[in-house]
Image (cartoon, one colour):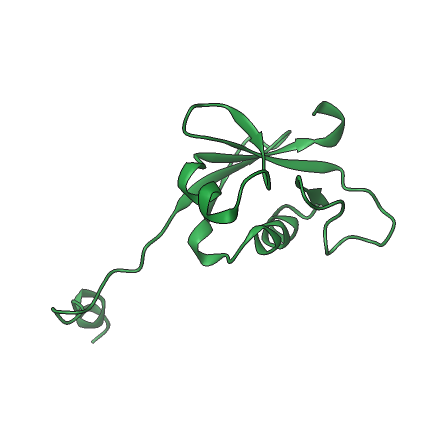
Length: 115
């Protein structure tokens, strides 16, 4: 039945658990953060698209001037930043994706006029 399917263990040997890298994403003005698995994404562009859909707002980061999903000519209202392992807030996109994955602790979507 359903219960036995849920408890079934993967075969031993070469089977590995899927890796995850969950981080909290906070948007300025929104009291509750959202959790996101960064390993499901393949780079900054897919991260930006995911967050634009998740928070329904135009967002930008260091290497991009506007969100792919926004109306042409409309400026992004928010910018994406992250807290690194040292507790410093940095601009997303300032380092290669793999280095970002190894140092990110949480993400913050800040209003553009407060950066």
